[in-house]
Length: 357
Image (tube, rainbow, N blue to C red; front, side, top):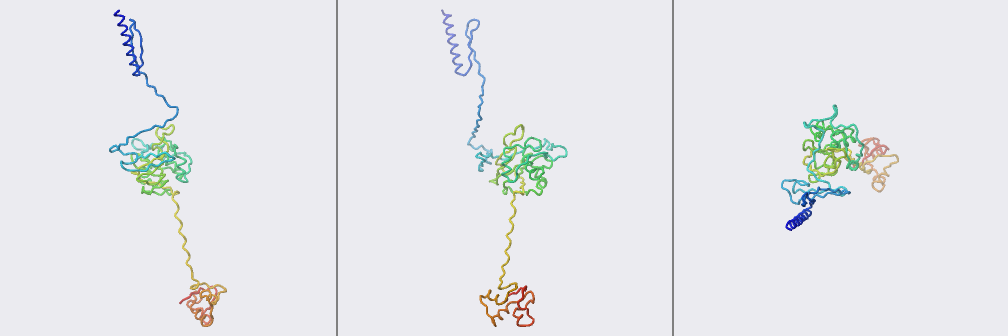
């Protein structure tokens, strides 16, 4: 009888253990051993990840507290830069971008022998008539012009330069974007097609800006104007989505970037409005009652009527005629001398006469 009660208690105790295990999310296995005793074992279930059939946007919540010594996405702590949007989506703000250009660890180029680093054989034709037209056609795209290192910032600049000038975006052997403006390389890139901008506050849409930070620097096209030390930049490999099949390059996107590392910019001359032609200076108005060219049919009576409002003959006409001097036929002689003396010229077509007080 005692043995029977003991087994009952053992069974009840085992069931209690099983119930507790289930409550804690464990898998319970209950078996009888060879002696007829109950054995209770537990196992931990494997984690299962269920994926949503529809893409769900991720939400990242940042602390509102300012972290000491850390620059925020809007520039240095305390600095305010307005957030710009494109099609309702905010443009990210960054301090600097460094492109992984075609260089080795020794900072030497790896290009085919005899070729400028980054020179491509083929490139798509794009609309460069305006900065907006170029942006509309290329935003979100992926361009690997030279076939090296996937889609780099250099390729985006080279795409524009090749369409505009027919020559590539030179790095002058450095293989780095910032090399395009250093050691006189900017003259080779600018040629007669670009005007150099050295003052960041004067930047405008369409300017190709070179940044000299880091090993490689960065290059992109301005799509706005200077804004409190920042500018909106269209560029490749500056944080956009990874290009299909690429291990390094990222799609063309827009960012608000600090101009702390601004080195200079190439402004396409096609975006510089021509200087307005100066207004032609008006021809001086000639007072025909002071200087006039005598034409066929002119008489002094007609001139007197036009200039004084009346015609009077005799001594009045002679007095009036004595003030008109020939400047062409008989210089310094008056019209009056022409009919009052033998050395005058009178009034002849083609002469230029001048009234003197």
